[in-house]
Amino acid sequence: MDIVDAIAALALRSLALAAGLVLVFGALQKLRDWPAFREAVAAYRLLPDPLVPTAAWVLPATEALAGAALLVDDLRIIGACAAMAVVGIATAAVAINVRRGRTDIDCGCGGLEGRQRLSWGLVARNAVLIAVLGVGIVVPGPRMNALGAATLVAATLAFVTLFIAVSQLVANRPFLVELRRQS
Image 1 (spheres, rainbow, N blue to C red):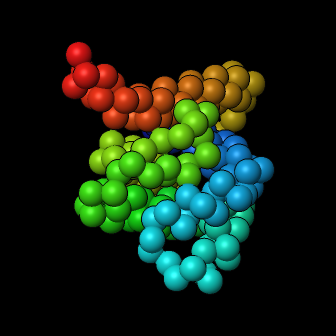
Image 2 (tube, rainbow, N blue to C red; image 1 turned 45 degrees about the vertical axis):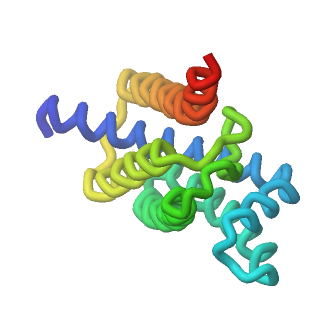
């Protein structure tokens, strides 16, 4: 493995680890305030009312398991597949509602950014996350030494920070547009 392949493998592994952390923490936030998440799922109006509580429990539970699996090298492929499925379902639900013009409902994402309206920006952010997970499946994990492990940790934290920043920008965009209209 040459240096370029090693760097690519390390970057992709750190992206998978970052995605795993984002998914685990997002799932924990959803489960911690499960009634609010259940209301968010119901607000999408995509499921019959009797299925909403089950979906509101299965989605974050699967998200947490997928995220945890992404953190374990031997489980990263199954974790990535499960994560792509969960994020894909959530993204499809967002896209359907944005297409319907229903953007003033909470996405239920469970992120640090708090209440987040549905938008094409959210769909794009999730599409990038799905693509990263897909690429991570086909690239083997890097061989590690102490420097590589330290770099992996630093890169993972950098990618988590980048994800949070992008999520915050996506969450704030509708509010900024509204402020511009008022001025």
